[in-house]
Length: 448
Image 1 (cartoon, rainbow, N blue to C red):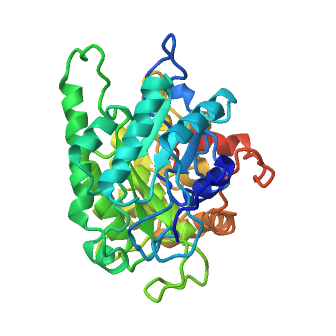
Image 2: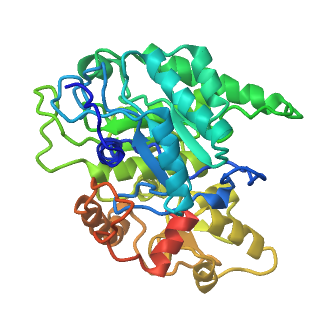
């Protein structure tokens, strides 16, 4: 189906904002750039609003596709070439107008711009570059911009676009080459990894400049990210996590995002998913990803080829602790920082507080609670002064019986949420009630 002509701008916005809802590579800026006289907006870390829809997607950015027309026929994609859907395309000028007007009305703090492949990768990347150039140079927009790099596009186009963007991303889509060949035969692993490597090298080169050249912008200062689809193929959690670990290590990825597969096309090669999108599995991958990035875990500690999928009844940190009961309990007054981070219920902040506080006095369980330790989990793996909080038998089955009840409730909440409705800029009536203060605190502190 071809792009409709003479379409009103609000019609295009409705189509292309909805078409962007399955792309989750959207997060807070990570940039530090203050406002400038004569320019609009900024990208300081506090300038990106951390507002999330019910499914956890960040909605502080205007998240749109430049076009949903695409030359590719990926089987999992709603915008695949063979689908009979309404097609639309912005012009660079229209994207600029929308971004600036939404910003002035305080709806957004920046732009997230992706696109289907219109005519060719080079043509599409050129349109994205023109859009960013107009926003920065003609409209003076100094706010946060996240843009997609199109695999197969001219490296020079990617370089010029990267000098105008804060963050770039290239979606890996599926963790294995076999999966890509089956569901996205027009794409290849090598074409996807090539712009990732270019962006990595460009960021590294920019960091080596001791004094930035006057009049020149840093190349992708907020780093790059990618996304993988969870559940479209038979790839295990271990395969997904091992690929993510390799991307962090070899491509210095800022974030790897995981998107639960939603069956939007009727295709014999796609899984049926009678229970709906694998949201709990996506959630476990995010938890494990957090453990790798901030807690020092490796993928092969959390999963193995013999045990390739996560326990859906326990979070990955609790599951690891139960499989390594010989390492517990540890004494909170003597354990080092790395040991404390391995305890369920102790996060990065609370571990640092423990290290600092015990220099002046010996700690007990009430002290740990004040520091933000989640004792409902940590109590089974800690001693204070050689004493445990509860008289519990220290074996995996006994401790698991105490932990599973809380996790089952959380799992039910995740599986039954309204997960794939895109938030409207003008209507938030469907949102769930605000979380309790203690729940919000535990999310912000990163305690697992």
